[in-house]
Image 1 (cartoon, helix red, strand yellow):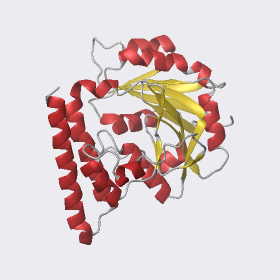
Image 2 (image 1 turned 90 degrees about the horizontal axis):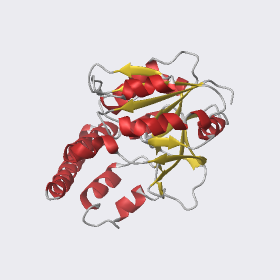
Image 3 (image 1 turned 90 degrees about the vertical axis):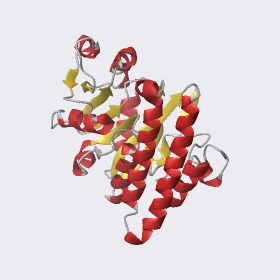
Image 4 (image 1 turned 180 degrees about the vertical axis):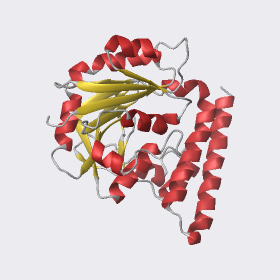
Length: 285
């Protein structure tokens, strides 16, 4: 590994899982890592600062909840200029030994690789973390039919990259749950679009990387374990709405032409209908 590496994560009441994440980092790389924990919910009762101090990593409290992308941007900006590679990760991830070095090895195989994603395991299954950029047709079909017709062709296409066995390949976007970024590429794009409070900021980043000529590379030779979206469980109904708002923001920005206004309207209607259906399901639980 030739380039210096940093690691950033965002906590929002993540004390229960942050310990496991930080404990997994020393074995993930043979070189020293500069680690920053951004705290989107700092308060006197929080153990996040205590955990950061225990593991000797930087603690960065946010002035308010900036969302995932906004807090990640702040954490990356706080890293020394010498950092060439940045692993951004959820705090409910545990990095397997050697995984960061392996991601950097793949990234350094081509100067045009701007992002590298590991194989993500969750609940004993391989999560489809490397996907195609969604199109209007795919987004509308998936939004309208995913819950009532799971085998629909648009959803199948959206999930079609969950290959068995997984192989190293380029992807349209890589899951922001755990992602290695070339600092130069990330800075060149201005980081995440923090207009996405949560969800789709990684889709948008992958799309912009591709448009700027950078490659996103899936590297299943590096593995991480993801325990799940702990920080959003208690707000699941609200997060459904946020997810659909972010989906619309991405698709409407990708397809901006005035002549596509009717299609954007159809996508918005489909997404809101799906959000209403899902929130009603949650409210009955």
